[in-house]
Amino acid sequence: MSPHIQLSEEQLIALLKNREERAFNYLYDHYSGAIYGLILRIVTSEEHAQEVIQDVFVKIWKYIDQYDASKGRFYTWMINISRNTAIDYLKSKGYQNEQKNQSISIFVSKDEARLSAGMNNPADKDADLIGMNTIINGLKPEWRELIELAYFQGYSQSEIAEMLDIPIGTVKTRTRNALLELKGLLKDYQ
Image (cartoon, rainbow, N blue to C red; front, side):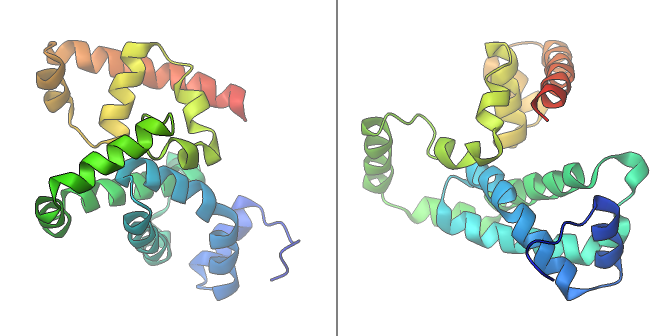
């Protein structure tokens, strides 16, 4: 498939469902940058992001028949797969054991390097490939914090309530309001 050919979302989905390899190549060429940026924001390591992105594209290929256009856009479906795969990776025993085995000096040197570069989050630069920082920074600070904890760090609402020492109902209300606001911001962003 020529790199200059543009497929509609419907055409791409149909080709993927027919297991056309050229559709998979098109999918990767056109979406891997955005998906990689999101994954990197969650796992914060290029090495780990490389592992996760491979899993994500295998899942998209394997589960394409489960995509239902009536439930949302294809891009949103892929982002959810990406987010969930990255969070599952962080919660995996292999990753947890690897983190326990790292020496403390590795973490200190990484933090010092980030701070000297003026970066609070190591994935900030790469995550903004899809403009997520700009969009999320448009939220109120307390909403932004909830979105980052829930969607980029994988905490449940009860874990967030405990961590921030606020009632679960408040977490749910703020998260709902943040998601509604984010939906509006995303419409403006397109």
